[in-house]
Image (cartoon, rainbow, N blue to C red; front, side, top):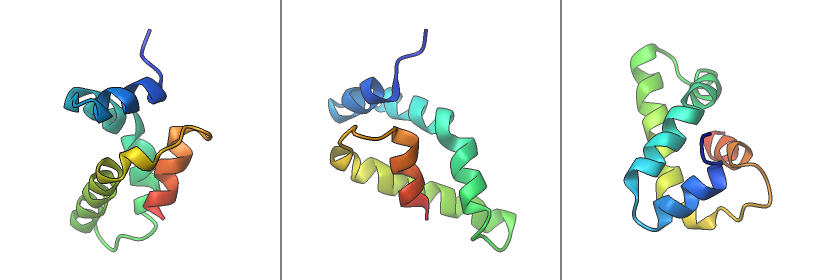
Length: 78
């Protein structure tokens, strides 16, 4: 059984970068789908997605857990 997003967020905040890698793998498809609406070509799409995940990592402590993590991440993406 895979850990819930909230546990992965807590682990990441405690210094476990592997936990964040799991979050990225779990939500990559959704982020790519959102970013595809804004990117003009594939090379830009990769950059946009990377920036979204970097921003999420930097602001992870702001995630309160009162909504699903994917919703919080989607708001960063748009």
